[in-house]
Image (cartoon, rainbow, N blue to C red; front, top):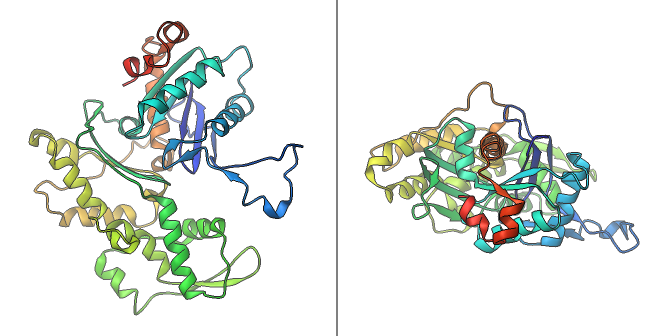
Length: 361
């Protein structure tokens, strides 16, 4: 049985057997609806409000919900059998607290009775997915943005940057902007999320964005309840906020400048290797026009060496940006489990949860 690979994001969970040249077998929402005691959904009008987020800003926060979610993923989704559990590799977000790693390995061995465990950082795995062991990962997730320089498969934590903003904050920004142009419409966040995915795009540059103030194509969109809204400049505001964080009310540099500043704290001997092997990942990074805008901003940045994006190999699955950490995890699982570099049940029984820090790095 192939090892399972699980990448649990704030919005989507990606899981499947470790087959690197295929997309994950499961891509499902991480958010769950809470069932009432008798097993029914209760008053259906309240269902949308009774939701549970096992993962918040990239980190597991609700362990009971996470246990339920993994139970569904492993036994129902991936077909594991109780009493015959396999090996599993998890992806770790940047700066995962030690307590979270320990609680996860404890959950997997004591509740799920797995035979082997490994965890590796998402930044490293995203680089593996494009055939690199050194470079810089720019991961724009639903709940956070991680910028992490990686040298020879090791994250340079001192130089890494984590920002507690992500796709959810861009969704809220879009809701505000659409509320201004459609003041009589009641939006749900799920409506806004779908509108963001369907319409959002990046302007070519800051000047092009400023021109949308005076001239922008207006489209009409019909919501599920029949209300019709107009969408104009708002579609560009979402992407622009990554390059002009002031749109989110933040006094901060744009994402390309943040990348350059992060790498500037690493030894200058590594600057070229890191900047010229930059990988974009996360759902927001697949927004139309984002990659082109990133490259254009890179050409204007303050660094003597300009960031350059690595293209994934042709044999890799489409939409690799969306789940590159999962693909990297599948590649790594093919190495660590056959070579017995993982945490075994015997390791766990002898040392306890802290073994994860010694064997998974």
